[in-house]
Length: 311
Ligand code: SF4
Image 1 (cartoon, rainbow, N blue to C red):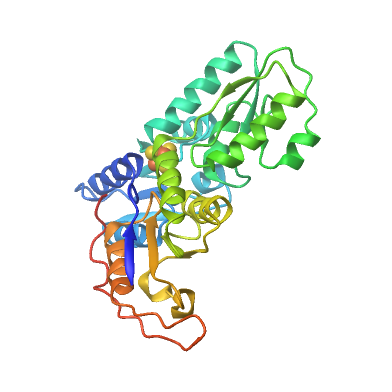
Image 2 (tube, helix red, strand yellow; image 1 turned 90 degrees about the vertical axis):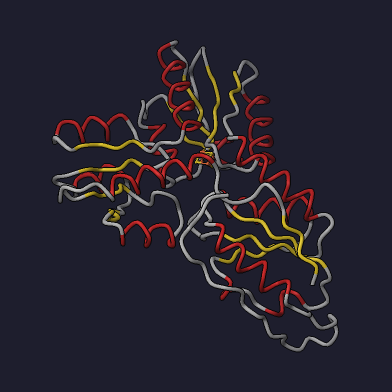
């Protein structure tokens, strides 16, 4: 089967830098425990590799709850960023901190800080329960209002002279535009700051463009990865092409490819490239049956992942 390697795909600069920082701390001699506060990136393979190098995962419903479970040593803040309360608590308890917050997320925090200082109420478009909104909303939960859906927009009650909207970095560009359009109708004086990062936007646009020329698309990424899930969503909704999320080559299902001639492959920003390469190799070796035949076909798996790499 013909495989279209969609580009750009895979690791973004924020993930590369976060993993590099965590590996550096994990390799330090000394014996003090090292904990990462939540998944450094939403990928199990990266998490296992870091655990093997001495960086333990502390996963809890919120970053503050997770922090309460770390009593000494070093704590790593993930690429998603943390709230000011988490920083203050870590300092108050004498923990050494390593901040792997992505520079794009830092920019959003700085923006929200400035807007709050200027007297704005901030609507923040993001995913409920995701760590990135938790960090941003933590700047002032009374004046940073988390909105996820159009229904949330309709329910909003805001009494503020100065109102701005900004966004989580990994949302769908198209969903965000729809939410902002409705917000503008409801609040005509709204100030808009779209903070979707260029890594997310470039991957989504490339996936949608390529998907229009493909019969099916495979997204390699974890089901916990917000940007990987958004890739599946935009391919299906905007290109009208079926898309499947797989964490590894073992999750490929032959029946997805019956009657297909061309498959596009992309990967979330937190997906190690060896995982994607294994999927590409398996699909290149696949000869799908005609759609009508419907019989199962064998997938020849490529080499499994070695160590996570970049790109
Ligand atoms: S997806 Fe964007 S915001 Fe998130 S780590 Fe990557 S570059 Fe940074």
